[in-house]
Length: 269
Image 1 (tube, rainbow, N blue to C red):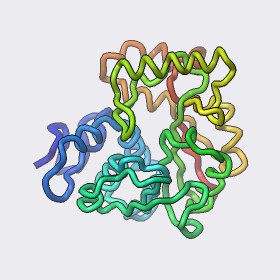
Image 2 (image 1 turned 60 degrees about the vertical axis):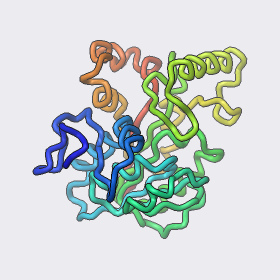
Image 3 (image 1 turned 30 degrees about the vertical axis):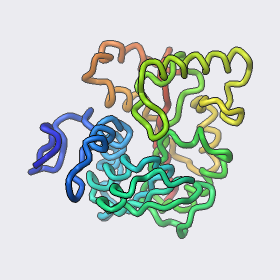
Image 4 (image 1 turned 90 degrees about the horizontal axis):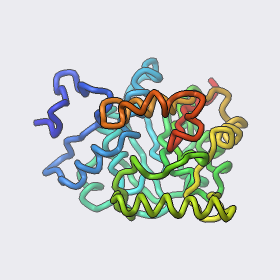
């Protein structure tokens, strides 16, 4: 029986693009894990995009989750795409039950020094991780190395020019998605801006502007498809924020109205 009423078991798809993959793990599902997976719109968007971007790649695909955190996104992606999934992070945040019940291969590793051969993966999920990496340019070089020619790298990161932060953020392993925490994040962001410390390397959760991230990607990826507007429509298209989408996605204001930026970068054939 599906855990989500919108899941069509016959077609193995979801009835609305905004719905994130909800998995049926082996054994009894953990309600907290299911709730966490539902909140990860990035995993759902990644799966939807890959289904048409990689339709000519033979399945099962090999996918890397670069910076997997507690592992819920990795499990959702593996079960939705029926892919071979490896997931790494610099520390082990994944619970023993999730490791046992899923087909994902979890291990501790740095995105700057990956334990995989060249061209190991068809696609890489690098979602809200690069802003935490000490050597972001080096991480992109390493991810390019392990990506197969023609494969896709998906990146999401906070927009450094954003006006507000954390509004749509989900529960994380070491951060609760409460309104008090979100307000605190915004106050810290503006304090860092006003004191000239709104930079990742100075400890701020700043992210990158589109121009900054594009310059980091350019040496390795000739094709860069910016999908920020598509992602915002995917995540908020049917929610209470639906009415704000025309404003937030308008080219004249989305450079500061969008809370985060998203891009698919393709390795040359």
